[in-house]
Length: 203
Image 1 (tube, helix red, strand yellow):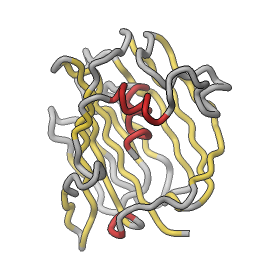
Image 2 (cartoon, helix red, strand yellow):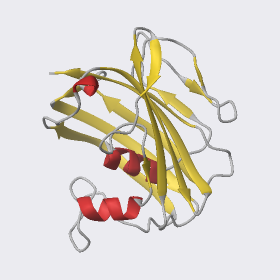
Image 3 (tube, helix red, strand yellow):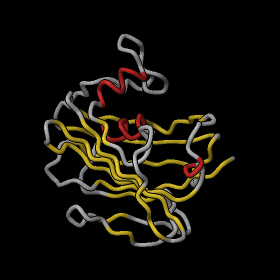
């Protein structure tokens, strides 16, 4: 989960929103730093939550199926841009909530899962993908970086199929509706802010 949010954050933030089509969904609307939930039953949706001057902008993001099945196949499309080079030191402040009996409950940070602060995203990426190794597919095929620094420019991931293997997640995160907000900063300067609503279900 940490790597997924780090990757999405490096694609960007701004003031637009996108919601996959579905019968019911909830959508985030920027309201300063206090986004509001519009509807109750979530399907996948996202929005940028930073100010207009933030350099990183996520333009499109689509994920199917909805809900996300683990293990199972996943289709993803994403595009974004950054007007500046994004380099260390990078910090991600992640807030994760789960819907429990109609109430959104903040999930605490336990074993680096939940509402955690990741102080060194560049080091985290290096741990997952050692420097000197090619970026994993499909990043390598599409020329997408997986290490700091991330140069200024446009980034695009065409519609791509993934397989999500069995993940050893806490029992409370194997199914349900979730919403997350991740803020990317460097030397206390906010570079990007992304909010995502998603649902998980077991195979």
